Amino acid sequence: MAKKPPASGIETSGHDEVMDPGTAVEHSSAPQNPGLAPEHQRVTDLDEKEAKGMERRIAGFFLLSIVGSVFAAVAYVVFPIIPGDMSSVRVNNLMVGLGLSAALLGVGIGAVQWAKALMHGHELVEERHPTRGTEEARAAAVETFQQANKESGFTRRSLVRNTLVGALLAAPIPAVALFRDLAPADDPIARMKQTMWAEGVRLTRDPSGVPIKASEVTIGSAFHVVPDGWKDLEHHKLEEKAKAAVLLMRLPVDELNEDPAKSSWSYQGIVAYSKICTHVGCPVALYEQQTHHLLCPCHQSEFDVANHCEVIFGPAARPLPQLPITIDAEGYLVARSDFTEPVGPSFWEREL
Ligand code: FES
Image (cartoon, rainbow, N blue to C red; front, top):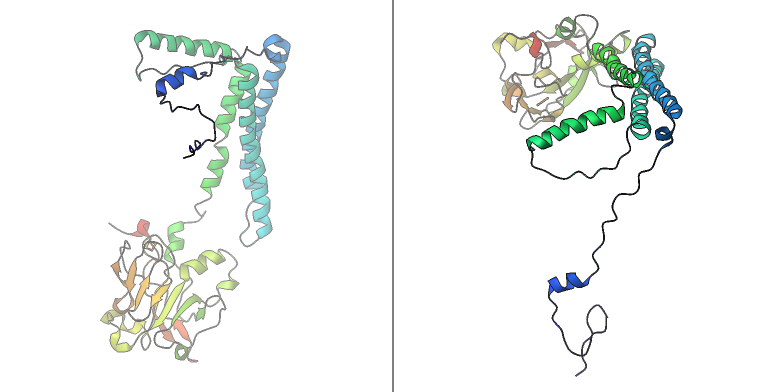
């Protein structure tokens, strides 16, 4: 019978031979450690004048970083974001972005140039050692650190070092300006306590703004509602809309378990509740009409509309605030007043 060739396709001698793996390794030619390449002398190693020139260029990059940081902070104030004006947003972002780019690039390029052109260029092989070295090793580390300090010129090249320190200190300046403006200039608590709802304000569809008649709200339906007139606001238009967002639903009257003190807050089974989740403020937008449950998609808090929107599941700590409603002379749904409690999480306004 013909002998089957090996899978590799390499011809073997006529007799089979079992090879010891150790022997195979001995026979193979092990790669040789080529060692480190000869040290390349840079122009800054050979010419002190070149080194000085490089030092000035590096300092220039760090100075550019300082200028960039200051520019970003100043630009944020000089080119403010005007609510409702998208071109002001673009100009503000462009200017602040240019400043931040210069600040980060300046530090980055300066640091890389310092390492490549001025710090010593030895290639090193670092042997592994136990976490805590011997006393000799520790002393050697200190010596190495001192040597590195000497070779990098960190102490000696005071111009580069000081400008780098200045650049790093200046880097957080834009952050101070940016974070400071996250809080509104006026009293944020006062603004959160009030919404646009007031006696007689019509409930309108979001986003069309069409007023809603009570007769249009059929049992089982749910409307996303905003107050009439929010588009006419001059300032904080979107914030006011977000605070006042409401969900409107109609339940069979006999399924509505109302607090007797709030029985006049609904109209023939039509109820309105704030759409801002009392957990951390996501919009509660999923209405399950058969169970009368509202679901917040963020962390799955569930509110029971039939029972004052009390929390039946999830991390929300209190019911959704109810908006008292009635109808006007033309049959349109209107608010009786603003909410009687803050909407949303509002944890900063509550007594423990
Ligand atoms: S924000 Fe609604 S459950 Fe967390």
